[in-house]
Image 1 (cartoon, rainbow, N blue to C red):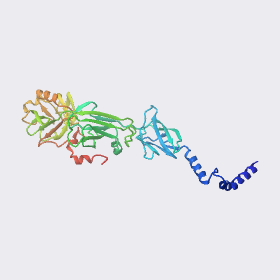
Image 2 (image 1 turned 45 degrees about the vertical axis):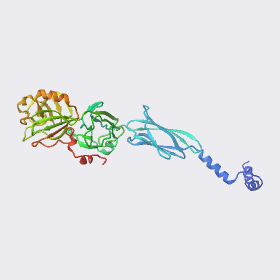
Image 3 (image 1 turned 60 degrees about the horizontal axis):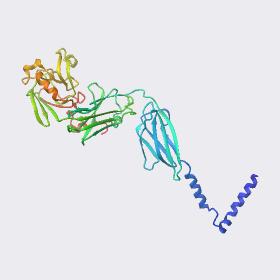
Image 4 (image 1 turned 135 degrees about the vertical axis):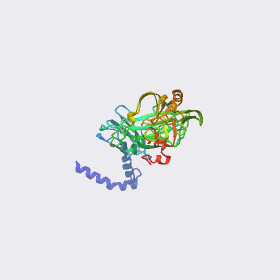
Length: 395
């Protein structure tokens, strides 16, 4: 039977030209090619997903590519149903997630493709990422839903070293309700840990709403390990308040909206040694109330050990503004403290009620020990703006 089929096929080929000359109902060679092309277009597109497999390295975006068609939709979800959003290329041939795959997660990828002939197909695949062998965490300031002074930076301190600073900084987003020029700057925190602060070029405008989104989940910090969560905080800038401390004249003036509210006598750090005060711009870090101050914790041997009221921290190294009734006779007359800005109980109580964290203290004086480093409290304001910008890993 097979031999008969061959002879019939050959005869059909020989007769085809005669049929074409005598009738319009036959199939031309061009029509044959068009049919083959149409058949090819009817084939569903193929889909390639990366990464793929089990225990793959995290920290990379998910990519989906279509061959022989376009992507109509792509969905990527983890085991908890949380999705990774993404973006299609202009030709709709590829899709890339906007966030990276995070450590220790399982993902399901669903892609719907379409061809020019209208053929649609749904393809699914799964992959898992390896768990993080080391996790990095962040401590940040200020806290959420707070009102801060006009010099308050956004500050992040990391548990472990950040060797890939550019990768981390790329994931940090600052948005403001009022157009504000600012920049990130890396430094060593007073604790010795890596730290990055965002400060505006000039003091914040009162009323500005500031939001930090640290989209770090799935980011590799380098030797310090992986981040496995995001962080966010939103705060508002309060009234314009500047504290001006003149150590030469031994007085402190609180200015609000550019006008002096009150000037009070103070006594600063004792000249000529380690008890001198810092100068430059410090920022009120916290109002700590009544605390124990021990000179041994700041390298001044046994100079003092006492409970101190209305304590307002200015640096990590131990400089405060506070009540110092034991120095009442020196207020406004001589600098006789161990480095802090002391004032009477009554003045300290009033002043403590007026200021808020984030208010700048602009301190001047001839006999001081210099300006605090950026990581000693919020000392970024002592760095010239052009120099501060160079501290970004993305410059």
